[in-house]
Image 1 (cartoon, rainbow, N blue to C red):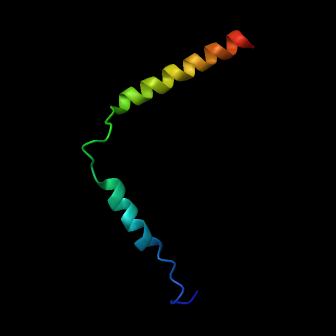
Image 2: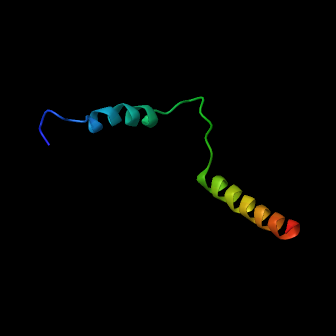
Image 3: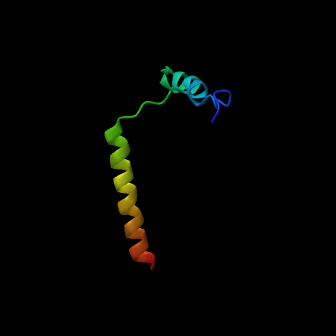
Length: 54
């Protein structure tokens, strides 16, 4: 690999890091425990639904 064939991976990802690192006041904020609880309840619902239909 020659030094002239730099893909610019680090430079191109710097803008994304800056974009996703910014806090937006209008963004929806959720507690991580709420997300985990919703996923667990949804999984239980799917399992019950699979047992009753099959």
